Image (cartoon, rainbow, N blue to C red):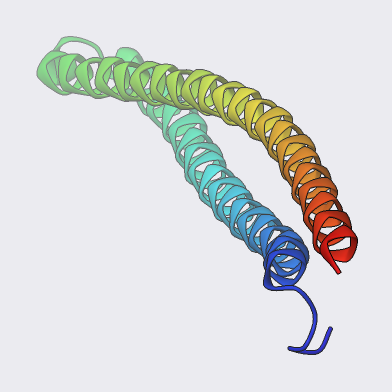
Length: 155
């Protein structure tokens, strides 16, 4: 629109595309954050899977070592005890990592649900705003027409 048109009409109509651009910007930012969260989530899962693999491999290796030590008998009792303690420690680490992963997934779901709720609320508020702007414009145009008629009848 050019600048010779009514300032009220221009400002009302120029706000709408700006809000759409802001909404698109917000949406792009949200998507970028979601992708970053997903990348981090996958990195954590990969680390956990890697550690689980190492732990399983270590468990197998330690089990074989334990069996070999049991065959040897009493002279290796201390070493067997140490290996068992290491296995127990590895199991505790696995359990802790698993719980941490589950907690992070729950937190992610809760945050995502809250985000969706706020997005719905924003969309509702934007629609109310659009209705108010449209009503305001109708009232102003009507008043301008009335003033114009009054001026026309004074001539």
